[in-house]
Every structure is written in C-alpha cells, then in structure tokens.
Image (cartoon, rainbow, N blue to C red; front, side, top):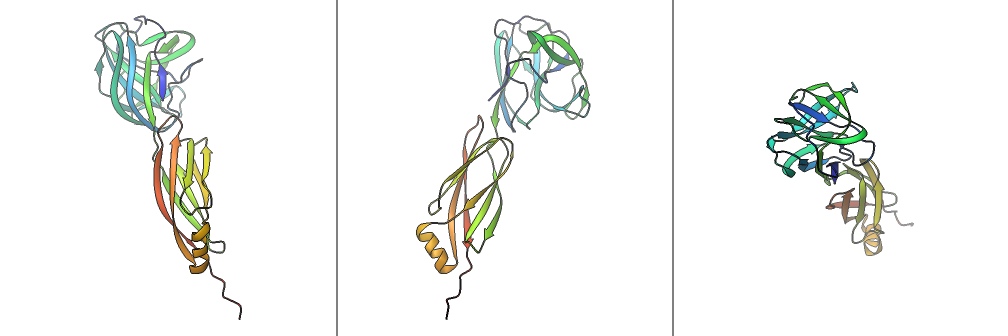
Length: 253
C-alpha cells in the first residue's frame, strides 16, 4: 500500500535550508496519511540534485490544528539524482502522517501543485516533540512510502450457550478488512467485512457427527480456523480449539 506520491515529471529544486515538512491533506491524489496500522518498509523521493540529506519522519496530530508531534524517524539518507528508494522499518498507527526532515544544498523536496499546501518548520524536531508549522502554498511533498498493513489479530472472547450447545467467538481486528472462519464439523463457513478496526462475533455451531456427539455426551471440541485479510495487505490465519457444551435433558421416567 502506497502513501504519498512522487512528481509526475522531472522535479525542480525549490527547497533550501534545514526544515521539517509534512502534508496533512491533498486536493487530489494519494494521501500522505496512514489509513491503517502497519509498518512502513521503505520510502522514496525523486531528486533533481545530489548532496541533500533526507530523513523520513512520522507525525501525529495534536489538539492544536497547527501543531504536529514527531513519533518516529528513520536514519538520515544522502540522496542522489533520480529516484531514491530507502528501506526502513517504522511502526505507524492509523491517522499518522509521513513527512521528512531535509538539510543540505538546494533540493527538490516539493513539486508544484496549485491549491495544495505543504507545512514547514525550520527545525529538526526530535521524537516526542511538537511545534506549530507554517504553510507553503501551491506545492506538494515529494515523498512516497510503502506501508504493509498489520494482519495480526486476536481471539477476544468466547461465550457459550449451553442450552443450544453453541458458542459465539469474537475476533478482534487491528485494521479494516475481511475475516472468515471455517472448520471441519462446523455448520457453515462464514465471512464478514469490517470497515474500521474493531471486533466481530461469529456463531460456532457443530453439525453432523460432532453435533450428535455433543447431544450424546454434552461436550465436544471443534477446531476453528480464522483468516484475516486487511485492506491492501496479506492474509494471516490462526486456529483455536473451541469446546462446545450442552446441558443434557434427563430422560422421562
């Protein structure tokens, strides 16, 4: 999943001096905001010159709409003319913004886009620090990053209905996406979608010989396989053994 963007053509050297840059919104195109929790694995810029030093930064909004806090950064990178793609590993939350600190000679950290505004601060904020930024009109940030959405999920709870011999399994998802449950002996496979991070309940119902054993013995264990596919990410599967219990009715005398 790509966040941010590079210039459509050859960039022009318009940035000078040491400063932090970010772009909270765009008038059209790919946002510079992480829409999912995940890991930034690389960042890129299209440079018109050689000799400037770029450092990817992750910013977070504060209660002041003009102020942004630095929450993480990558190692400094000396850029060369052309496309520079730099590997990194930075954890981000949904809503975090990518930007960078730029220093050195005249460089192409932005490119012209009428109606857009890049935010700039003539400083190098450390992690945890925040400050108000000023707008630079009619330009867009020359930065893109590759984000891999988190696909790790958890089983958040299990509630049994001993009268029916069923259970409700809750799956807690870190990102929007699709999750499905299936298993040998289950009544049916189920797939549900979630547009925001949260929890989804699934009914667990035995069928066939497992249901007969449950009715006869009052308990049975079923293996449930859950697969989560985050939007734009890779699927992951986890398994859990679910014990179903049923109150047996005493025979009439």
